[in-house]
Length: 89
Image 1 (cartoon, rainbow, N blue to C red):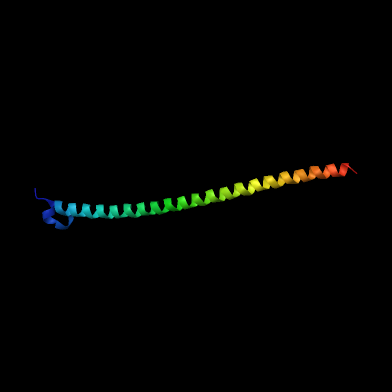
Image 2 (image 1 turned 135 degrees about the vertical axis):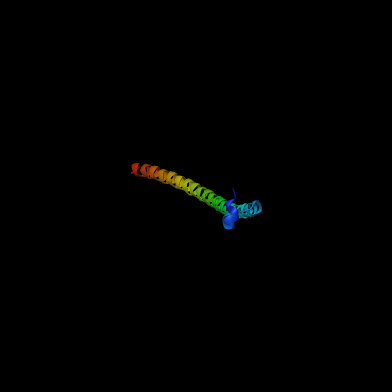
Protein backbone atom coordinates (compact mmCIF):
# COMPACT_ATOMS: atom_id res chain seq x y z
CA UNK A 1 0.00 0.00 0.00
CA UNK A 2 1.54 3.35 -1.00
CA UNK A 3 2.04 6.05 1.59
CA UNK A 4 -0.14 9.13 1.44
CA UNK A 5 3.02 11.24 1.22
CA UNK A 6 3.48 10.00 -2.32
CA UNK A 7 0.16 11.48 -3.34
CA UNK A 8 0.05 14.45 -0.95
CA UNK A 9 3.63 15.54 -0.23
CA UNK A 10 2.47 18.77 1.45
CA UNK A 11 0.89 16.90 4.38
CA UNK A 12 3.92 14.81 5.24
CA UNK A 13 6.93 16.04 7.13
CA UNK A 14 10.22 14.26 7.01
CA UNK A 15 12.01 13.41 10.25
CA UNK A 16 14.43 16.26 9.61
CA UNK A 17 11.58 18.72 8.98
CA UNK A 18 9.90 17.59 12.20
CA UNK A 19 13.16 18.07 14.07
CA UNK A 20 13.58 21.60 12.67
CA UNK A 21 9.98 22.42 13.51
CA UNK A 22 10.43 21.12 17.07
CA UNK A 23 13.68 23.06 17.43
CA UNK A 24 12.02 26.22 16.19
CA UNK A 25 9.14 25.77 18.62
CA UNK A 26 11.61 25.04 21.43
CA UNK A 27 13.46 28.29 20.67
CA UNK A 28 10.18 30.22 20.77
CA UNK A 29 9.28 28.59 24.08
CA UNK A 30 12.71 29.37 25.52
CA UNK A 31 12.41 32.95 24.39
CA UNK A 32 9.04 33.25 26.15
CA UNK A 33 10.45 31.65 29.30
CA UNK A 34 13.29 34.20 29.29
CA UNK A 35 10.79 37.06 28.91
CA UNK A 36 8.69 35.67 31.76
CA UNK A 37 11.76 35.28 33.97
CA UNK A 38 12.78 38.84 33.23
CA UNK A 39 9.32 40.04 34.24
CA UNK A 40 9.46 37.98 37.44
CA UNK A 41 12.84 39.53 38.29
CA UNK A 42 11.45 43.05 37.73
CA UNK A 43 8.40 42.30 39.86
CA UNK A 44 10.57 40.82 42.63
CA UNK A 45 12.89 43.83 42.53
CA UNK A 46 9.91 46.19 42.78
CA UNK A 47 8.58 44.14 45.67
CA UNK A 48 11.89 44.54 47.50
CA UNK A 49 11.78 48.30 46.95
CA UNK A 50 8.20 48.43 48.23
CA UNK A 51 9.14 46.41 51.30
CA UNK A 52 12.02 48.75 51.99
CA UNK A 53 9.65 51.73 51.80
CA UNK A 54 7.17 50.02 54.11
CA UNK A 55 9.98 49.46 56.64
CA UNK A 56 10.94 53.13 56.48
CA UNK A 57 7.31 54.18 56.90
CA UNK A 58 6.91 51.85 59.88
CA UNK A 59 10.05 53.22 61.48
CA UNK A 60 8.78 56.79 61.03
CA UNK A 61 5.40 55.78 62.45
CA UNK A 62 7.05 54.28 65.53
CA UNK A 63 9.02 57.48 66.11
CA UNK A 64 5.89 59.61 65.74
CA UNK A 65 3.92 57.27 67.99
CA UNK A 66 6.59 57.34 70.70
CA UNK A 67 6.75 61.13 70.50
CA UNK A 68 2.96 61.22 70.87
CA UNK A 69 3.20 59.03 73.98
CA UNK A 70 5.79 61.39 75.47
CA UNK A 71 3.58 64.38 74.68
CA UNK A 72 0.56 62.68 76.25
CA UNK A 73 2.57 61.90 79.35
CA UNK A 74 3.64 65.55 79.58
CA UNK A 75 0.01 66.70 79.20
CA UNK A 76 -1.02 64.35 82.03
CA UNK A 77 1.75 65.72 84.23
CA UNK A 78 0.67 69.26 83.42
CA UNK A 79 -2.95 68.43 84.28
CA UNK A 80 -1.90 66.84 87.56
CA UNK A 81 0.21 69.88 88.39
CA UNK A 82 -2.68 72.17 87.40
CA UNK A 83 -5.05 70.30 89.73
CA UNK A 84 -2.56 70.66 92.59
CA UNK A 85 -2.24 74.37 91.90
CA UNK A 86 -6.03 74.79 91.85
CA UNK A 87 -6.46 72.90 95.10
CA UNK A 88 -4.12 75.32 96.85
CA UNK A 89 -6.57 78.23 96.36
